[in-house]
Length: 444
Ligand code: DLL
Image 1 (spheres, protein in one colour):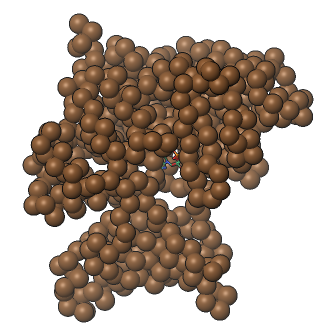
Image 2: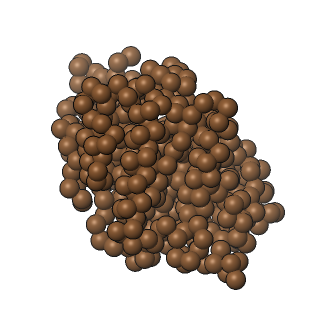
């Protein structure tokens, strides 16, 4: 009997997924109870939270309703760096059963910690993630997220295994072996960054294998921004359903939010992560539906509670109910981070806008890089994009027309002219994890 529920991924009776379907009032009561508990835990055990709340004159007893969270101080990434390595822990080290770290681009990593209870929560939100994406107990899950200090590999591993799927802990890289395993083991689900999966599609083709003919049917993709246009390309070329999942180390890792069968916004596991959208300039909480920065408070984390963590990720709540029946709210896919925003000749540009423009044009491949330079004090943008070998070997005139078309598509979306360079397939470096889309040489 229970087995049937495991196999019905969208059932409210699915033991792990039940909280996705709680009536609003019941969920809010649970959130408030957990918010009060986590604020007290953070205040009692973490010096930084205690001193910030004291400075603001906020007492734990002041949190009487969910919206009182707006009184609480924010936490930012530098707080984790400044307290490196263990300064934000609310548990004693013997109670911590796992550490992960996120490398960041410069300096020391940030360290995150989990108690046994945190591991159970993490596993449960990953079960809910997989269930929402239609993964079931009979699936064979090829987990190509990196294993190690990155949260992607082990986060997805524990969830898929607990769901009852067969997990292949292959980690990222060694693309030829990935394709061999996908074919020989009959993987039905792949977990990877979307950019790495694109590379796997190419690798399969190079080995004379069509993904369309393999049993693979779903991809659980996240850890980096990607666009709807990218999803269309992935689905068309591989024949799989591509789902977007979101998370960050500071909050738990993957398992903060996930798409469902509707593929229309990501459900936040709100019973564990309390979301707010703020105006990043005024820091005011914005009304539902307005676009701003996502701020998250962990409602059940023990080892490392986070109070109003500013993610820098830009999104909005989708206010319409979802056709899947889940009552937990959805956010729009995270297409941009406020710190990824490029200011080019004074115009704000997100790399995802360029991706959108490029992939709308036929003949391009979903591999590109944005190179910024400065000449005579003026920012220059070059967009290098791979084009199909047919286009590349075509007449000069056809290439020139495509270049113009792409230049116009970019100018229409971002409002400035970029130099477009068409390059051969496989020219741009492939990543095994998060893709590096921007090379900024302006201050060199
Ligand atoms: O990337 C956790 C993760 C692993 C999520 C696997 C999904 C799948 P970090 O390395 O700490 O953690 O990076 C977190 O990556 O603040 C976003 O800016 C970005 N990000 C994560 N998922 C998405 C997504 C993991 N689906 C940072 N869309 C976040 C856009 C994403 N950006």
